Length: 331
Ligand SMILES: NC(=O)c1ccc[n+]([C@@H]2O[C@H](COP(=O)([O-])OP(=O)(O)OC[C@H]3O[C@@H](n4cnc5c(N)ncnc54)[C@H](OP(=O)(O)O)[C@@H]3O)[C@@H](O)[C@H]2O)c1
Image 1: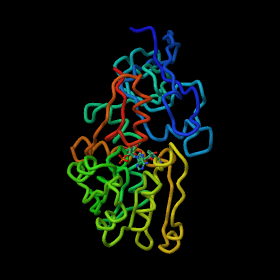
Image 2: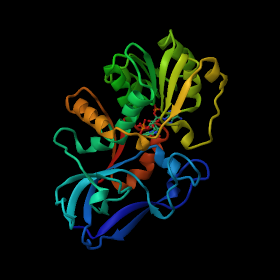
Image 3: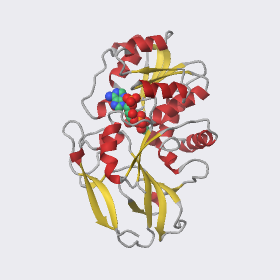
Image 4: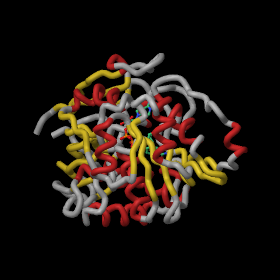
């Protein structure tokens, strides 16, 4: 067994955009376990947009992470050694050990997962936190109904792809928004959305109008910024917007709404939500597992290999270089 654990630490806060110099690769010795502890070899590390908010020392829905510590984040892996009841070597577990090759925790830090029906990596994506965020937004926040029209932004990504497919299963007309023709083709061809608009194509407002000629009842917002402005113009009276994320603003300045008057003119209901505060995770995970294992919910992953690739892959995620759930494979 190796004697060293490699980690990525946050060593400085970005002044504007995040850069590779905000991170440092670090090595620390693996020490013997104490009674009650479990050592896990992390197999996959999840990279998520919220991590960019944690790099700032200012209030947001994600608390700042201290400098000089391992970047926080969800992991799945295999127990290598256990001195705790209920866990044995070989158990597959979900944890939040962050950007490192090994994690040590107690039983309360780990959740056993079953990779016989869905792959281990999916517990970080469509049957993990991003999938549950999609489920909560569609079912609990927007409370969508059959025959409505829903727009979903970042539609090819971890959350957006699930949100749109869930809404299709419920009988909605679903229009995605994503960056580039390849991602648009995937959203309609593979995921089964009714239409998709390329927001980088230069004619987003016109393309959205063409895709939603009668307007829309609901919007699942993952990005904020100019995309939100364009979608607000398509909202029907009494339309609902679930604000799940604002990734267009995470690595730069806030982008003010161009036309806030629409909120009153159209009597819009806009609700932000954090998935960790939502109740009903068990229901969500049961449905997501069932849909994935029966092939009714498709997902795609962008995987880079090796811990040292995590910072670059993370910066790419903030620029849309990922195509599907961004993961780092560590073994
Ligand atoms: N509220 C919660 O509890 C919760 C939980 C999970 C996730 N979220 C939020 O949900 C959103 C999606 O997360 P995810 O994990 O599914 O990420 P993701 O969609 O897999 O990856 C991020 C995507 O954001 C898009 N993007 C990046 N910069 C953009 C910009 N300037 N304008 C428009 N789109 C841009 C890119 O897609 P394109 O190539 O299509 O631009 C990129 O692929 C994020 O905002 C995240 O913070 C919130």
